[in-house]
Amino acid sequence: MLIRRDTARMAPKATTIDQYLASVRGERRAALDRLRRTIRTIVPKAEECISYSIPAFRLDGRIVAGFAATAKGCSYFPFSGSTLAALSDDLEDYQQTKSSLHFDPARPPPAALVRKLIRTRIAEPR
Image 1 (cartoon, rainbow, N blue to C red):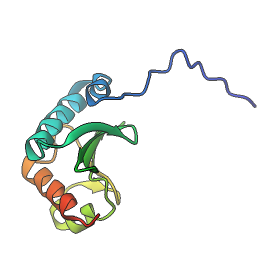
Image 2: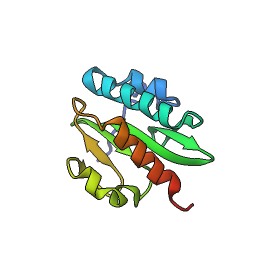
Image 3: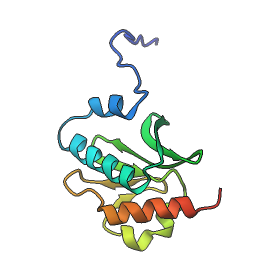
Image 4: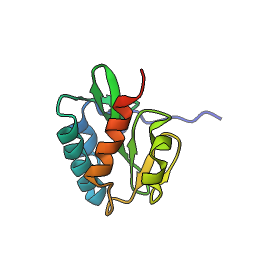
């Protein structure tokens, strides 16, 4: 069976964080806007980009943080398979996978935790 997609209706993929966020509504948008500002404060020299179709931040050629809206809330991505494990005691209140931290938009991770996540990621060997 052939499935035909109407490509004229598909939204183009975002190429900037602003474009990505323009497609997010409500409290998820507000939470991601706050997270973006927090990340910019922690790593002001990081370049904003899109990596793996999600907003991300590149520092010295390496992605150190990212985020996304999900069907159930929001996620933070350290772009590392070891960052979250290294901070497991700090992340007990969050659902997670090996590479993503999930949070309710009404309870985003505090700036101190985001700072810890980013510093841990930056300290990892290349």
